[in-house]
Every structure is written in structure tokens, then in C-alpha cells.
Image (cartoon, rainbow, N blue to C red):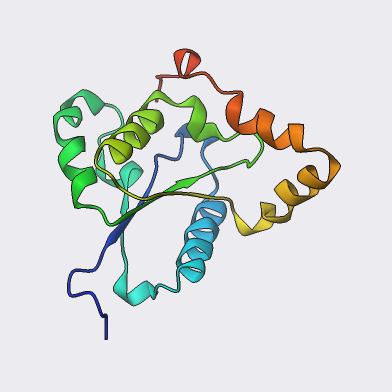
Length: 147
């Protein structure tokens, strides 16, 4: 039985749409690894995937509700795919969701697909600067706002 009577949904922050979206295998792999890491059972965890619940071609209709949605979530997962140039960090909507998670005080986790899990460690062994460049080199001012 679930010790928490209110199962917590997990937000997978907006995987960028179109050809730059993570493959379903990568997305589900990252979510599965996250559940395993936190020792959460799939049967007790509910997922809220914005790409399935938000009208991607009319996000303006969803903007007024995003803060309320974020406050109801238990945890947030941002899937970094590919790990070294995460598409989600180049998308305005994804950054908007991350900002609202932060404003709601929601725990925010970063995850990579299992097939890429060893790559950051290899880069770190080569040189620390490579990792720092990945996650400090994005600029929200140049984020893409197209669907």
C-alpha cells in the first residue's frame, strides 16, 4: 500500500516538440530511472506530462492555470536530452514551467535517459569545464518559442 494517501504526480518538464523532442524510449527511460532512484512504485505514482495535457498550439490559454497545476504536483523532473545540450533548456515553455516549479517550492530533479547516464561522468573525468559549460551556457533570452 502507498504510505501517502495522496499519490504525488511527477512532472516531466516539457520535452520540446517536433523533431527535437526526446524519443519516447528516452523520455520513459529517464522517468523510470527517476522512479527507481526515489524508490517509487509505478502503481503509486501519477505522471503529468505537459505535452499530453497542454494545448501545445494554444499555450496562451494554459498560462493562467500553470501556477495552480505546479502547486498540486509532488515532484518535478526535467529530462535533459541530450544530456550535453538539453533541448528543454532552449525552450521558453520549459523554462516557464521550471520557473513556476521553483516559485511553487516544488522539488526539482534533473534526469537523463539511461542510455546517456554514463556520458556526463565520462566528460567529468576528462575535464570539469565540460560539465559546467553544459548547464551554465544556456541563455533564456535566446530560447525558442515555436511549437
